Structures are given as C-alpha cells and as structure tokens.
Image 1 (cartoon, rainbow, N blue to C red):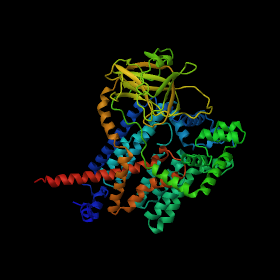
Image 2: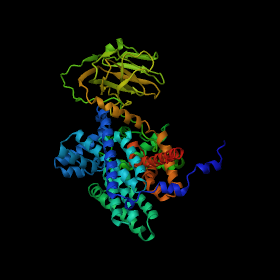
Image 3: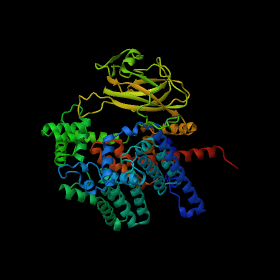
Length: 638
C-alpha cells in the first residue's frame, strides 16, 4: 500500500495524547509521597552505581593508555598544582616571569586548584584524581536524570540518565586528567537552575545559573559566551516584567565569578584577557585543518606554530612554548593573521564553520568495555625483572611471518630497530610474531618500543598463530598510533608502549600490527619486544557484567544516536513543547554556534552531549510506551 499523507496522519500521534505522554509527573499528585521519594532515590542510586562501574571497567581496560594521553597538558596542570602545594601562590597567580612569559594564561586556573586540593587530601597520585573525576562524572549522570525529570516523565528521565551512565565517551574522558569532563557538571547545574527559575520565578535560581556558568569557565574557557546565550533564552522563557532583570542577573553573576581571573590578567599582564589565551592559535589551527593545499600558510599544530615563529622572528626561545617570550603579542599576531584569512575568504570560511558544526554532532569512536576482565595486578615492573619472553629486532627479521606479500621488513642501519614498510591500502596482520607460550588466566604486560614514521599502526595481542583470515581473538591492543610531531624532526628515538592483558583460557599468543583500516603507506620501527608476567588474574566473574555493558555500548554510534535524538526533538515539537526544546538544546546550540568558528575536538563539546542523550531518551521512552500499548491492545486482560 502506498505511503500516503492519510497513512502518515494515522501513524502520527495526536498532539493532546502525545503532550500527556511527555508531561512531567506532579509530585503533589502522588498517592504516596514516601514511595515516590524512594523510587527517585532508587533510580539515582542505580544510575550512579552503573556509571561508577562502567568507568571503573574502562579504567581497568586502559590502564597503560591513559598515562600517555595529553602528557604535555597534564604536566602543565600538575606543575601549577604543585605551586599551590608548596605555598607559592604568587608564582601560581603571575607565572615565573610576567608579563613577557604568559604561559600561566594557557589554561584557566580552576583545574590546578582542584588538583591541589585532591593531592593535599589524598596524596599526589593520578589514582586519587581519576577517582574524583569518576565520582563527579557519575554525579553528572544523576544530575541529568534530575534535570530531565523537571520537564519529562520520570521513566524518560531515567533512560537519559542511564544513557549518560553507560556512555563510553563520557567514561573515557572522565579518566583523562583534563578538566573537560568536570566542566560539564556546572553547566548541567546551570540548566537545572534555569528550569527551576522558569517554574518558580526564582531570582536566586537565575543568579545560581549564572554563577555556575562562571565556575565552568574556571575549568575551561569554552563557555565564556554561554551566559549571554542563556540570557537570550531567559528572554523567551520569562514574563516581560522579569526578562531584563533576570538576563542581567545571569550575565552579572557569571561576570562576578570570572572577574578574579580577568582582573589578574589586567593587573599582571596589562591586557584585557577575560580568561585565557589561545583563541588566535585555535583559529589558526581550525583554518589549517580545512586548508589542505596550505594556501594561507597558517600552522596546523602547536609545534608548527612555535617553530615557525622562532624562525620568522629569529627568536629561538619562541620554540619553547606558545605563550612564553612576548606570548601575548604573539597571540595577537596569530589572531590578526587568521582574521585576515577570514576577511579575504568569507564564503569559504562560512563553509568550513558549517562543516565543523556538523562534525561536532558525531560521537567519537572510543574503545568499548571489553567483555573479558582486565588486568588487576600492578603494572609496575621492577628494573631487574626478567621478561618471560623477548625478541630482539634481528630475531624479528629472521622470524618474520607477515601475511601480506607487499611488505618490506628489514633491520635498521644501527641494528636497533625492526623496520616495517607497507603500501597495502588496508593491511591486516602486517607483522605476526611466532606463537608465544603463556600461562592461562594470568596477567601479562607487553613492552614495545615503537616509532611510527608514516601512516597509522595498531599493535594487538591475539590468540595463537595466524595464517590468513581474522579468526583470532583479541586480548589487548594499543590505540591507533600515528607519527608524533617532535620539536627535533631528526629525533630517531623509539617511544615505549605497553599492553596489559589477561591470557584467559589461551596458552598461545601472537603480536600483530595493522593500520586500523585507515589506508595509505605505513612505515614503522620496532625495538626489542619484552613480555612480563605480572601475576594470576582475578575478578573473572565480572565477564558477565562486562558482556552486558559491552553490548549496550555498541549502541553509542552517531548513526544510531543522532537519528533518535532528532526523533525525540520532533516528538517534543508535535507535543507542543517548543519551550522545552529551547531549554534542552540551548547548550548544544551554543557550542554549534561558537565553537564551530574555532578549532574543535570532541572533548571541547562534552557539555553538549548529555542533552543529545536526553533527546534519545525521549524517543526510547515513547517507543517503549507505544509497544506496551500495542501489546495490551492485542492481549486485553479481563
């Protein structure tokens, strides 16, 4: 039967019925307030425990990966936190040599302050900081439930909170020692208070919302213009007599919270810098990302920026950092160069802004929770510990069992590296080691010195010996490894990577390389491979829970989430809840409008993602409601 407009009208839910389905529950109408409170508390506890468990699983699976991520930024935050721990508040505020050295303005000061507090209370360790971030991120999932329950049925809110708890993206970034995940929490609280202000006409709630936006800016400067953006939202949501007062209160509260940073910058560095430096650099990199022919000559990375400036101005010291040595003036010049490109190519720039905005809606591909338990033994290997298996580069060349025929394997001139070259567009099992005998249900650590000169490489631990197809089981792997940008391009040193894995029920392992399906020529150099036995594995019973989480996380793909989010938005629109859409999409709309002008990474727009999950929660709730009604209609009870 053709799908006519009449058929669509039959399928489309009526506005009144849909509006009733998506109405929040009235606490005052509950027959048993104590039962209602118990129900809410139970949902919060479940969401919190699920979120904690998922993040601990991700932590266990990636223990060797997280310490190697964003090491430069993490070290910067730690060094500033140590200044506070030593009581050197003056240097923390001004930096070592102001105003010429402006490196202290690279990031807002909030995260080092939090780091110093955690280190003071629990000792200086990455573990304590990660646990703190895990708890805060789990709290954000619970807060999303509370926020959604103000506008939607409790079941829909519970689905949204559960999605945030299960999200592999949120779990992954909560374990990186950067402020990105922490900055989400105050923004969610700000939206919650805006909802409360709308419901109860509370001036205090508006002030709290503005102050929380300011708190977020102490962690990341990306939300600098969020307060004015939300003030425009208040103009729509509130009555005429309160609009101007509420908008001014929200902006004013945010300014007051941010003001100490701005005043510090003005007094110490003699420039009006609201929070931190970097906008010019980000605009340069953002333009260069889309300038594949390099027509404009703007640098594409931080190292390219500092090295080119050192050469341009004949100042070798400029190569040491982005904002050291006339840092503010250099940043102003970067901004001027970027704006000149924008001014001369406005249509082209508008196109890349739209393309970047579209890319910001994608969910980043991160590792899902593994189905098998991870390593529980300590990863610290004593210096004198002997490996249970090792292969020198020369041995790898002699024992090369590469599957691909278009592979060139050789020994480096100094005999210290095994060199692999391949022109295969999508190679698999590029180099496979001879089978390695291992003990079952045992924790191991594989240490691999590696340098990727070209292309992309993934190193994997697989079961047994591979002779062709992908029939093996994967036990551990590195992230996708690409060529590292180095200050000294001639540096030939190998970077040591580690893979921790559990042998489970296998007694033979192999090491293999592939290019993660990313194509192009691949050139990589490997050093001496060493395998260490860490101890007997434990927590094997968690494989049942892990399998459930792993299966659920397969759903967290752009192709699945984004259409469901659009459907949720359409359902709200058909229910006549346009103002609810404005509230729930205010933060995503802000990041799409402002962050898309600059360079962006997934971690920059993390605060927008909970609201996407909230829209998905609406769709899943309505689908479950509809299916339940159809079942009851087909099987009526007496």
